[in-house]
Image 1 (cartoon, rainbow, N blue to C red):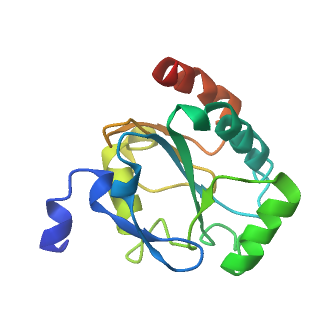
Image 2 (cartoon, helix red, strand yellow):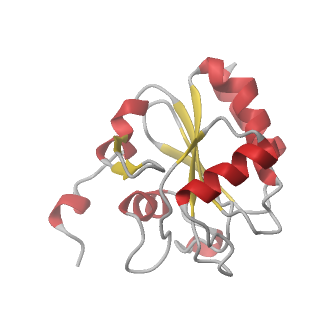
Length: 168
């Protein structure tokens, strides 16, 4: 049974997460912004998507757009590093300037409450809530509503079309 507090959470703004230094961050800080929330990994075949994510961020960050990246080690142990190692990897290899948060779980009983909410709001293939792999992406409108879920194989350039409709 879910805790009573979780049952009544309606928006991503009701959640708190930890940044990569383990400082609490209220997602209400992002009110009014369009968000792309992604579970990421440094040793995955899809890791080159960081480049495309950074390109999206560079293109739209001046239009109240943010990318929130959450490292996850649940898929093939492809994110084994510490938060510091992950951030360094992203800086050196992709010059990432969007926010990278604390490593989390996205599936199972220890899944982040934020990701439980995202999965409930935007189901995957055939109504599945489970995240299948690294680089699953959730698009959140500027009112905090989850409007779309993208598969890990959906590259950031394909998301650009949706973003341009929302942000231009």
